[in-house]
Structures are given as structure tokens and as C-alpha cells.
Image (cartoon, rainbow, N blue to C red; front, top):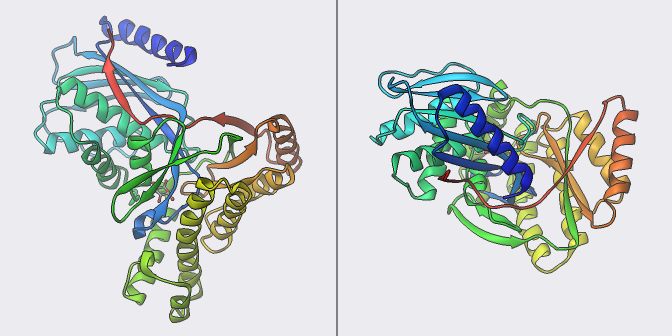
Length: 382
Ligand code: GLA
């Protein structure tokens, strides 16, 4: 664990002690994720290639000191919440729905979850397209399992968190985020087959560093754009009579509606790009991999229409800065850009990105350099 993570955990431990009078007994951390390529492919059984990133949701917890049958939560960034362990715990329409949804999944499985005090914090930016919601869900899920002394298979945990997001947050997401946050590995990205639910490790070339730049446009997938895209993809599948995973470019001729056709064109071409990208990385064909990232962005921006001027400006600037590849990442409608940059060229990249972003009137661009790290885990504090 790095010094800065240890420092963050220590301050969460202090906050817990001040609040509940108890020392932490359990702790958990869950990374965010960045998807290197393959967006809006997961809910039509396609391919994606994410990695866990060293920006985390963190939590510390102790058995409840009050004796009341609930989980009391303080999020240092989002406020307070109280979740009921018995009786109904309906949606509230705010950040606590991710937690309520996860808890309800464990309650449905009759897991005996103890009353606890929890303090949540971390350094993963919220709403920046880096899966802060899946990271929160899995941080909480691993903590619940440790405190309840009952570990579910990791696959079941990832799927129950996805279900929690459907039921409570109202986002009909695919499996990309929860799988990435659960199964992430140090120094590796993963090729995710969203039909087979299988994962293959893909090495990140050692001569590259990964930059993430927040567009500053806060993405809220619950706002409806995400669900609309999903419906459009499903409309294409109904008209073709098959999953877009099994469709080919020729099939596009059978789609008459131009919007539906464009959405399908993105998904079909993106699935191809993911597989070619994975092969390119394995063969050290870095330039090819980078070109596929730029092509993915074009496709998400034009055919899938989930980019925004801020993200398009960042990708243009990355190209100008000589980045090997760059694209928006995640659900879109704002969020972050990711770029592959050759080691040694970080300073020039930052300079050009900052200049172009502010010159376009979008303010200060924050560049973060991230590493691939392992997935969510919980441990005993002492
Ligand atoms: C969001 C969803 C994922 C996936 C991406 C787009 O992050 O939660 O399931 O669909 O958007 O690839």
C-alpha cells in the first residue's frame, strides 16, 4: 500500500473513532477503472478491455456501538446515511442508493450482516467516468462479506453489484464496471468477453504510461442518455434478429433507421477493434493499438453520439501532443479521456493538453497518471 493510501486510511480511521468511539476493525479498498477500448459493447454481449486504476474508494468500519440495528455511514465526500438491516430500505435518489442496492442483495441472500459504523472516503474522482459507482458498490460489498464472515464467489459479487445498480440506481448498465473493479490485476489490463463472462489478461506495454484527463463535464448516467443508447442497441438487435456480437458490417444494410444504423455500426466496429487492439498489444504493435483508440473515439463521438466538445478537444489535443492513442472512456456524456503516452513525453503531453483545453475556453485540464492495480479487497484492520 502506498504512503498516500495509508495516510487516507489513517484519517478515515480517526474519523471513525471520533464518530463512534471505536477503533476500526475492518477496512476495504476498491479501485476505479479505465476502459482502454470497447465502450457500449458490454450490454450486447460484446468485448471490452478495461484495467483497474490506482485511484480508490476506501472504507473503514467497526461493529456498531449504539446497538441499533442499522449501518451508519459517513462519506467524507458525500455526506451521511443510515441503512436499515431489518425492514424496508427504499431508494432515495442519491448516492446512498448504490449502498442500499448492495445491502438489499445481501439481505435477499439471507446473509447476516452486523450493525456497523462505516467511514468512506478515497481519492477516486466522482462522476468522472472512472466507475466511482461500481467502486463504491464493491468496496461496500467486500466489507460486508468480511464483516459477515461469508465470502461469495467473486463472480457472484460482481453480478450482485450490477443488479444493485439496475434496481436501486436505475442505470441499466452492463458488466464492464463491476467486472473490472472486481477482477482487475496489477500491471495488466483484461480482455472481457461479456457473453462468456470470461477474462484474459493483457499486458500493458512497459514503454507506455496511461494518462487520464477529466473533461470537467460531470456525467450522470442516470440522466437517461445511457438508457436511450441501450434501447437503440436493442432495437437494432430486434430488427436483425441477433445479438450485435454476432452481427457483421453487411447486416447494417438491413437497418433502415439512420440513428439505429449508426449505433449498430459503432458496436459492430468497436467489438472488432477490441479484439484487434488486444492482439496488437500482445504483439507489441503499439502504433496500431493507438490508432484503434483514436478510431474508437471517432466512432463513439460520431456514430454513438456520447462524446462532448470538451472530450473531442482533449482527444484532438492528445493527437497533437503525439500521444500513441487517446479516446473518451466509459459511458460518455462527459467524464474522462484516456491516453497512451510514451514514457518520457509526459511533460510535453501535459503542456499541450492544458494549453489547448484552456484555449478552447474549457478551463484547467487535470492530468492524472495511473497504473494498473488489483481489484477490490477487504482486510482486518489489525
Ligand atoms: C458505463 C456502464 C458500463 C458500460 C459503459 C460503456 O460505464 O456502467 O456497463 O456500458 O458505460 O462502455
